[in-house]
Image 1 (cartoon, rainbow, N blue to C red):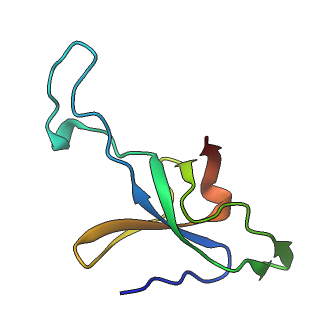
Image 2 (cartoon, rainbow, N blue to C red; image 1 turned 180 degrees about the horizontal axis):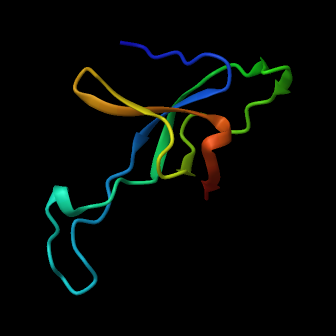
Length: 94
């Protein structure tokens, strides 16, 4: 299935986080925080959103940091994705 976001939306897939603490303890998935780092898998075209012209700054393949409680999570073909607005992205990780 192909995902094509609309307007200023971006589809991201979470980057797996460390399952161990610095001291070596293994954390179960229920104790881990929701990851805030993700890889961009689809980008909307931008355009006029809420009366303002939006230019898309991110591209497919970028690794980004996004706000903790932003976006909507969903599953497609057994994979988990988050769709969020470009304004919810805080930074591009290089």
